[in-house]
Length: 350
Image (tube, rainbow, N blue to C red; front, side, top):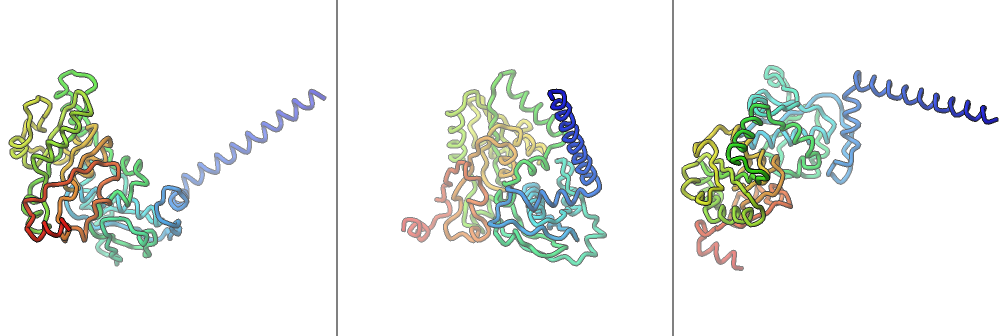
């Protein structure tokens, strides 16, 4: 009787093993020959979705793309939004050649590129996006959709953050450059806390007050932000990048020996600057999508300039602070006195 029990157990385990092997073979077969079916199942039945209800599986017919506009920060926002919304609606995403030309030299992006000759002969449905996620975007109809706008909000893609970070993996030459620079300024010290400082000025110096009733970051804001990190962390090193390094050198106090300007104080290439910022532990940003994305990739703590427009600014019709900056990021209110009038002051006081 005891021998019979042993024999039965052996048979039982053999059956389980055979079933397991059969299921594995089936999975490998479908993964190889029907990859989109598996991808679509994962796309449309996941807890990562942020909409009130799961979107329909969508048709496998056709594909989506997004209009390629703006510079690096805008291009990244457009790429990530296309990636997230196409995934959410069960569609294959393609990027235009112009976007590939901008991003592929910097990142190991994985979305396929749509040939221009093909794109020009497609009757696209143009779908405009606001700069924040809306429920309607979970159920966008159409097989050939071209998204438009300047989306750069975490509300579109933060639920798949790991996948977005994977898409924006830097090429080795940028990683090596960033690490080499950070090692050189650490001076052999251990446990250095690197804080990226991105100062966006350029056209914003005139556009913000003249068009958007707002301001750019000033000297006082940067001093407050740097003071926060100096008090919280020991052995802090600040890495400054900007398109106006002369202004930075005149307005950022480097007398303590903990401030280093990228490229010996000269404006560097956007790709190298961006990689350098993203490889730091924490971030001080001013305004603009370049700084937002650098902070998003870096992780850690982020300080940003908040409330940098007047309450009646037309900018607030296309921009929401809560959609641009993650809830855990720390905002320091801007000094709006340069653009305040007596009427504006009375409105604020009310």
